[in-house]
Length: 398
Figure 1 (cartoon, rainbow, N blue to C red):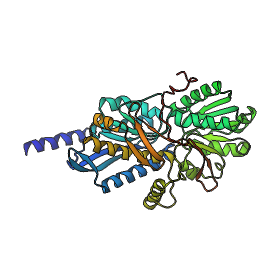
Figure 2: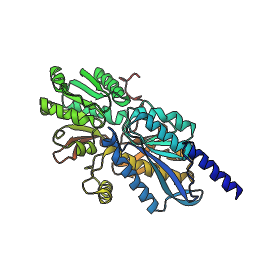
Figure 3: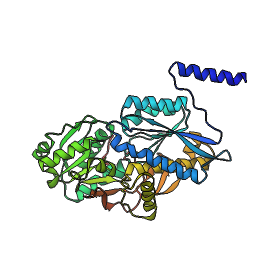
Figure 4: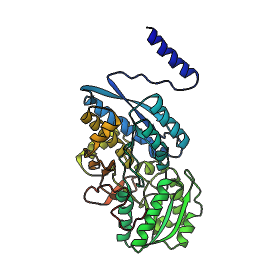
């Protein structure tokens, strides 16, 4: 009794001084963390990810949960809002790891945020399951990357534009790690493939200042635009292109636009433009049909599924499979169990490459339709093995 009173007193003392109290978890429960932006400029892209992750947990729990130390355990979660703010993201990640002692966090969006917390996950020996497409040039035993890397998105996007005869490319993006690094990769590809980068502009995250962008692009005589803007900047950008008549003349291929952005912005300005992704709501197959139906049944028939949502959903299932395979939630055990693990995902079968902690994924090019969905017009025909450091491309020199 004295020991219990001492623990209670310590918890009260921590709370009184403004430090979060550790969360006590049942022995029959595994607690995980979710960290996404439900507010701010990135909410348009991130808000649906938590829904997909929660749905995955409900499916896993309904099937018995995860097997740890010979016992079936249900998954519980703590949900934090990073508010589209890098400092808040770091703080909330620290709270989940230091005070709630979760072995895994599902979350993140921008590469800058991911890179900011990598040392923290290594220090606390925890795993981050990261669902966003990213620029590559990174791997870590403390991260499972379930979104596309550069050779599964950037390169197929450029291959498509080249095959359509585009030779003069204009780059527009947010001033952040992924757009800037993707810009370097695109310029290296262009130099080796007879393409010319005729213009390059970056705007701060959340910017809506695109009043003159149409005239700037027109003046360069570009054949195509590659767009790496993040979040709600896309709405102002595409509206400006429409006003200048650029959308009707040039193919605009986006690397960060999904069905979520189309639904929020509205298809009026986006219809006819292109995207490069590894999953679309319209992707064929019974597995995706079941996924889409389950998502709409749970969250509303007006909701859409998207690339990053699907990657978030897949990440939860892969982690749970690895935990049950290892019989442990310890990150080092889970990391070892992930190597070679496969999952029949809505996008098609994915496989974890243990050397890089990335997935094999099928590249897809889609066109946004007037109904707000994205129709596939090309795919790679098979899953592409991850090559985050672009080692298989002679034109890339980091």
